[in-house]
Image (cartoon, rainbow, N blue to C red; front, side, top):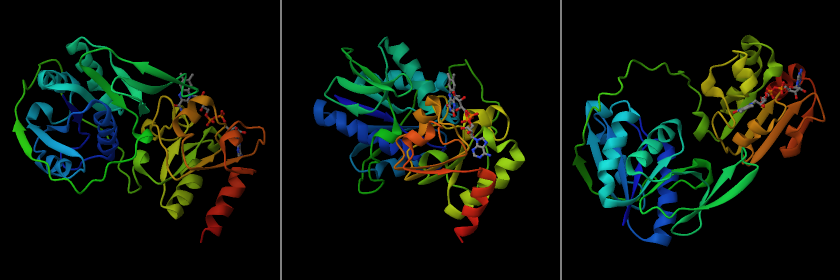
Length: 315
Ligand code: FAD
C-alpha cells in the first residue's frame, strides 16, 4: 500500500523538510513497495501542491484547500489525515514543530504507536531513531498495520525538487473540528537564511552577555559568511535572542556545511542539535570546553577579541 507524506509549507512555498521526508518515504517504499503521495493541506495552497508534484519520486499529490487548514492547526489536520489513511499503509511527517504536533494525533486516531524522529529505514517495519539526546541510537520495529512516522530532516538527503510530474487531486476533508482557533503568529522577520536549511550557521552562547553584544558580535560575522544565526538555550533563556534561534535537543536540529559555535560550552543538549554539521568551528576561552571534542577547528581565545578580528579578516 502507498505512503502518505505531509507537506510542510506556508500556503505559498514548499519547505525543504518535505523533500527529506519524501526521501525517507522512498527508502521505505524500496523495502515495502507502494507509491509516495504528498498531502498539501492549507488554504489557497495550489502553488504548493504544484511544487510538490515536481518532486522526483512523488506519484500523486492530494491538495486539501480549506480555511480550516490555513494555519495547519493539528486539531483540524489530524482528522483529515486519519480519514485518508484507509487507503494508505504509512503516514510520514517531518519531525518539525508542525509534524510533531500533527502526527501523534493521527497515531492516536488510528490507535497505533508512532515511530518518532527516524534516522534510517532498515526494512519494511524497522527503523533507527536517536535516544538520550542522540547519545544512543535505538533500532525499533513496529508491528502496527498502519505506520505513523516522523522523520528527522537532517538524516535524509533532500529529494530533488524538480524532475517529477505527478497529478494533483483536489480533495476535501472534515474541515474545522471546532477544538481550536488561530489567533495570530509572531514570526521573526529576517533577511538571513532560515536556520534549518542554511548551509552556514553562526551560533552564540551565554558568553555574549547581552542581546546587544550578541548582535554586535555575531551578526557581522554571520553577514560576512551569508550565514543563519543560531543560539544556545542559555542565550535564549537569558533573552539575548528569541527562542526560534535555539539549536539543540529542545530547539532546532541542524546539519549545515559549517557551524561556528561562539562562546558555547558544548553541553550534550546543544550537541544533540548540531553535531552532524559537516565542519564545526568552536571559539571558546576555555580550552577544556566540551565543544572542542566535537570541533574540527578550535580557537581558544576571548570571543570579544577574536570574533571581530576574524570578521574583519574575512574582508
Ligand atoms: P554555558 O554552558 O554557560 O557556556 C558558556 C561558554 O562560554 C563556556 O564554555 C565559557 O568558557 C565560554 N566563554 C565565556 N566567556 C567567554 C569569552 N569571553 N570568550 C570565549 N568564550 C567564553 N541547550 C541548548 O543549547 N539547546 C537545547 O536545545 C537545550 N535543551 C536542553 C534540554 C534540557 C532538558 C536541559 C536540562 C538542558 C537543555 N539545554 C539546551 C541547556 C544545556 O544543558 C546548557 O545549559 C546550555 O547549552 C549552555 O549554554 P551555553 O553553552 O551558551 O552556556
